[in-house]
Image (cartoon, rainbow, N blue to C red; front, side, top):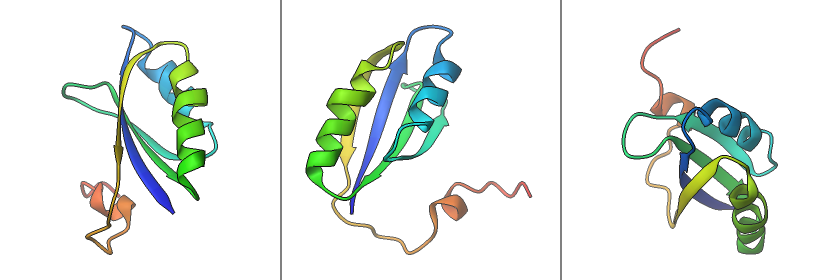
Length: 92
């Protein structure tokens, strides 16, 4: 399994539209709108590097409203915690 984190900037007013489009793509497990230097963070999980390359270059980079991306490829997982638990802020 190949995991990547993609940091994305969008055109003004396009964050929700871009997030919804990304969330519908196969291989993207999560899309978060965030505060900070980027607008969105997408978590990608695919079987092979070739699938990652296709997803990033052929699909994500073609989404209307995206102005810039930075892809971070995960080497090793250092936690056994589920991602949902990692991002939980105690709101049940």
